[in-house]
Length: 324
Image: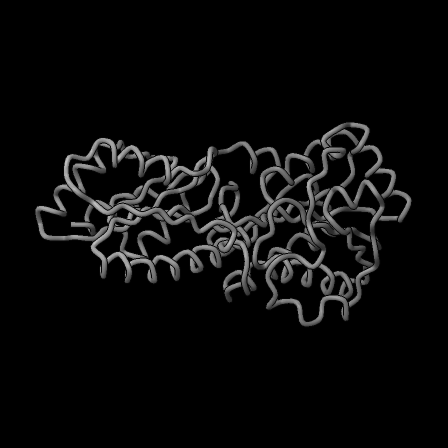
């Protein structure tokens, strides 16, 4: 093996550039040429590629987003589109592909491997932390800290004006960001897709807090698949509550994806990028590189996608105990 390609796909995540940098410099160290693919699978189908050097990734480890860009590719969803991508890789002489992304990215990589048997390794780059086979995904730690900073600021206003704030955080169908940022931010209630509180339970808790002379509350809500979960929940509470409460909604949105990656995400991105490259050199393919108990692991892509990543029950128990 003397030439590989690398791309980023799906939503951007802080730490992706650290991962790309590790792939490129690790490749140079091992005597490989690394080809960058612009705009994910869309660029792969179109042949939008360029050679990456050590200088190409200089001054990138501290930058958020992805220097390779990302884009959706309806064409790659088809067998014909994936065949074009395969032909492009053969034309440039690439012998393996590293894809950095999340669930959708790995679905595409799995189909691509099954159809063409082209060596692929996935690197988990998503703020959602929803992939099995790794304790943490690239971008998750930064997203949690970004959400926490916002929660701390909103709490000041909630306390000053005696308001109830519902703060919606990202995570798709995973409650990891909500759970960790909510616990660290001292939220009174946290709603995650894995265990959803009923509206009556929320109202009962708010009543108890009002009786106990606690005039403000923070409720963290994971966005869910339908989005606007917090706004819909706030309307339900307003219609069912039988006493006056000033309820406000804040949706943090894409601010959680941006910004300079944390130290943990820079280290994780670097370690997984190098792990993906060296995994290919060891003959591994159709797997995702991850970190479990501080050790590199390689999990089949199908398992990483389909196996549900459980939420930590001890953290859910902490919410009940610490909100009294």
